[in-house]
Every structure is written in C-alpha cells, then in structure tokens.
Amino acid sequence: MRTKRGGKTNASRAWAWLLALALALGFWPTSAEAYPWMIRHDYTGCAVCHVDPSGAGLLTDYGRAQSVLLMQMNYGSPYKGDEAPSYANFAFGVPLPDWLLAQVTFRGAEFWVSSTTAATPTTAAITASDQRFLMMLLDARAELKFGIFRAAGSIGWGTTPFTLPAAVWTNQAGTNMLLARDYWVGLQFDDSLLLGIGRINLPYGLRNVEHTAWVRNNTGTDINYSQQSGLFVAFDNGKVRTEVELILGNLNVSPDGYRQRGFSGLVEVPVAERASVGFSALVTRANLTTSSPSPALRQSYGAFSRWAPIEPVVILVEADVFINNTLGSGVIQPNGVSWLQVDWEPIQGLHFAPAIETLTPYGVNGTGVGTWMTIDWFCLPHTELRLDGLYRYQPTPTSSTNTFSFLIQLHVYL
Image (cartoon, rainbow, N blue to C red; front, side, top):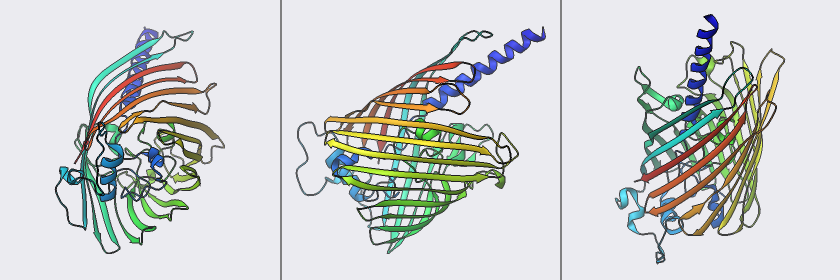
C-alpha cells in the first residue's frame, strides 16, 4: 500500500513538474522592442533608438520614426519624405513635450504546449499538455529629460508567478501583481556616456526577445523579470559599446540574504561593415539560496556576434558558459548554452527567423537541443503579429523530455 501511494505521489509530482515546464515555455518574448537584427541597417548601438542603452523597452523619438520607416510593412508604397509621419508619435499622433517620452505596451498570446517524459525501467512515459491565453505584457513606460538629468521607469500588471521577481505588490494568491521591471535616474553626458543608479536589464549578451531561450533563461539575463538594482555606466562612441552594472541586488526580494550582488557587463565592437563581436561577464554572490543555506557564487562568461552579410539576412550567435558553485561544498557545476539564429526579411516588415539552441547541463549525460521557427509580421503602425513554433529535447539525469510548443502573439504599443 505504501508503494502504491508513493507511486501516485511521484506521478502527481511528475505531472506538476511537466505542467510547470509547459507554462514556463509559454511565457515567450515580452518586450519585443529589442531587435539585434537592426544591424542590417547599420545600427551597431542601441541607445539611439532606446532609452535603455542595451536596447528594449521605451523608444526614443528617433526609434519611433525608424519603426515606421524601416520596420513597418509598406505594402509596396514606402513612405516618402524626410520625416516620419505623425502617427509614429505617442498614441498614433499625440505630441509630447521635448522633456517627456512615454509608451504603453500590450502583448497577448494564445499558446499550446505538449511535453512527454520518456519511460524508464521503473516508470512509464508521461505526457502533459496545456492550452491557454496569456496576458504577457501590459506596461506603461516613461522618461523625463531635463538638461543632462534623466529619470525613467515602468509600471505594469502581471498575472503569472514567473514575473514575481519584478513585483512590487501581489495579492495573497499571487495571481495578480503590480510590476516595476525597471526604474532609474542618471546623467547623460553628450551622446556617448550615461551614468545611473536604479533597476535595469542586466547588460549581458544579445538583447534578444526570446527570453525563454537557454542563453537568456539559464544565464539569468532575460528582459522579462531578471533586472537587478545597482550602479551602472554605459558608453557608446560608435567604435565601441560597453555597459557595466555594479549589482546591489533585487530590492523586491527579501530577506536580504537572497539578494545577489556582484557585477555584469559587456563590450561590443564593430569588426566590419554590418558586423560586430561582443563579450560578456556576470559574477554574483548570494548568502542564501532556495536550495541551500550556504552562500552561492554564480558566474557566466560568453561571446556573441551579429553579422548581416547582405541586408535581408542577419546572423545572430551567442555561446556562454555559466558556473554554479555552493561555497564550501567543493563542487563546481559548469554548464554550457549556445544560440544560432538567422533572421531573413525578404520584404520590409516580414521576418522568417529559424534558430537552433543547445544546453549542456552539469550532471547530465547528453546535450539538450531546441529548434525554433518564427514568423514575425509588422503588419500595421505600432502593431506586430508573431508566430513561434518550438521543439526541445532535454535530457535529465534519469530520462529525457520532448516538448512541442506553439505560440501566436499580438503586440501593440502606443
């Protein structure tokens, strides 16, 4: 009888784990304003179009103009003129004073996922599936500019526990949350140097929107909820782009022992026309973790590259090694991840973006492989439709999991 009850418990736990995995895979790109493939238009830096110096989030006036001139499908009649049309502005044409930038973003999605864990000598194969609508993003963002002074931030609404690290308020059930993904103040010296303090996206690797990709999720550098508070400096003079943050921890996390402190940074340099190479590093230490009362050291080091051999095609590559170490245990856990994506834009506004990723986790005999197929259509002003299909094979210490996911998204921003 005990064995039977234990078997049911193990099966229930397996189902719960698979559903959690499925839900995690469902939370796909959120802040879709970050497009590293803009290097096809000779943009090696990000700050000219984004308030965040590494891209993503709030657009500048120039960035709004380029979203119409370079990204929106023109249906054979490209916009003619030296300036973007007025509907590129906030709320499709509302003029704002020079000292204010504002943006409201919504992203909703319907997703389907199915996961199968292979049978072992002692357990049968288990299949779990899920389908649901996701309110992925509902954020308002703004920046104030007075002379060299800058103040920026966002406030939003979330309905999933996966965004809990960004929550400043949540109900008791944890099903509704008030989110503040980023907020900071700083000083902007000319167009190349920014000094600031606050909560920002970690400067690391490609600022790609596929935040569930292993290079983003497993290194803890996605733009959905992995922001950290600290002091930061960003520099970009067209010949070198670098950003470093002295991490003081996630102030939304308590007690203090769970907060990670350290640094994160990157440097990227153009190496040819429409080509760049970059390097990243991240090192943090926390006195407590959810799995151990001992201090933990987390390290991640990697390289990335962007290259447009011809204007319609951009190749994005990243490879990282991340190391987890519970201090005092004598055990160092190295892991490896990689990402290769080709973005093909046959006509302006329509993108086909296949990708392949790998994961080599510590303690597992084998390498996980993921294959992505994305169709991204910038169909109307401030509007994007995106289809994502993903297959992942992931080995575990005792078995393996095969996951199929499909996601259709609507993204609109004002």
